[in-house]
Length: 295
Image (cartoon, rainbow, N blue to C red; front, top):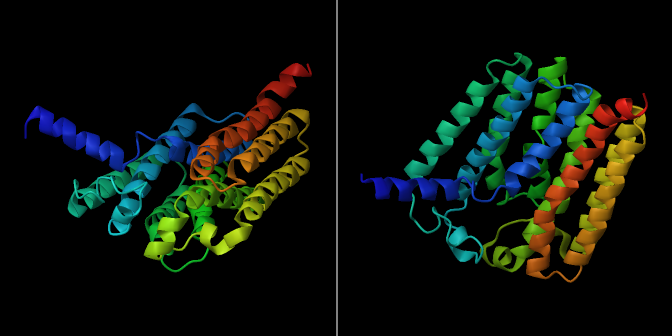
């Protein structure tokens, strides 16, 4: 294989792992960072933080490869996905499965230095990432399942830091499930016409004409659960300011999706990076800046 051929192959693998589209990694990373900062009271060990950041990147990449493998016969019929490497048959299924296996193996190696409580959770995380693409064939709300898969860094972070997940960890996971339902329904609204033709199940199809209302209710549920967490932990103005900013962003998303325009729905989906960042900013300010400001 020549250098140019190798470069072309690596470019295809990059696209298969979506390294050229980091939004998915960020949507996994923010809830993991929420949990890590809350579980450590704003003082996570640098090694643990980097392990979770790299693990998020690896697992998201593996999940993308598995998703494209599962959808390789559907993606060619969807305008937005027809040029993906597997859909376009530019990468073989054997290559894809090998790549996914390597990524999962590397992610597992990362957790070896962490507490044993995380090991079994890692196996569950791998199962969730591998099985999610297939839920679109039979489950009316696969986006809810995605919320569990995308938020599983939350219980892993609590287990790594405190030795257990606890009620707080599972509560944060519930908030993430509603958030994923919101943003991935926006994503599914982009492909609704194509998905109806090929028989894929999505929340956008299940919610039907109530899709916009459902998205906004999911945002409200996310923020309501996080507000309850803040009250339970006796958080103050910085934390709730972050939630307020996130609420304003959710309201902005309504203006993008209310007419169900494909470009607007996709823009709203991508904009969820800032929703997650606003919540993390509130947590960070509460735990790292508030004590300094009140001295």
